[in-house]
Length: 329
Image (cartoon, rainbow, N blue to C red; front, side, top):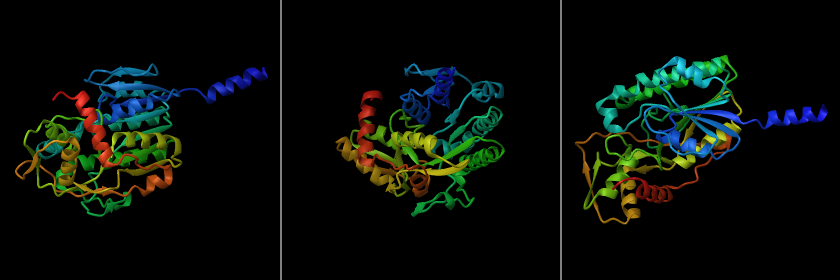
């Protein structure tokens, strides 16, 4: 009986944790799903909507679901230990400028249902990738506490929605035992990003433009905006460390490289590393957002021991290599 009891206790200690990853076919979700699938201690439930599933290890179970349906959300969250909520409507600056409302409704609805279901089913840890569009424009490194409630007009819809969702997450953390990690990440780049010119962010769009350009690279705006870029592998590492090391019930963390670079400098680096002989032409008539931002990530370094490992030159090389293998020229 004693031996049986010890075996039973050991089994409970090493029982696989059930992880729900919403938006597993999107850019962030796919990188996290692939990264966590390498951990045999996780039974991963990957959620997709319209995009097709892809090959993953046997510890990953696929579900096709519309997360705007509260009954569907409730059924999926039930029994999960960890929820990583990456499902969202996202796009680049073109859509943010021309259709600023697209980041509001669906994202608010999906996440509101997810938070409530996590509360109802006593999820242990909830990871929520937020963003940095709520921060004020600044040429100095931005800390989590620098958010002052003032969001620039072109980021208003996306920014206000993210702030609302962060507050709802904090509200539920006060009601329950669920631990919440809010990740205010900078511009993520790397494998599985959107590389079409209509939907992609500045990094993905620039890679595609450079790789397809023959003589001239057209850049929207004047290229003087300061940005912070973080490779997807570093974000995955951040999630792993937060799951293991976050001690408090609710935390907001910056997640970025902490190194400022202008769009113009980024373009020059991509051209140089690609080996192509092309010139840069700035088109100020095209949609762009005059906004400067790079992150101070001291809090994440101190509290969960996270530091980005991939510098921008290395990241560009890795991304160009992936683009050549996976994107049709």
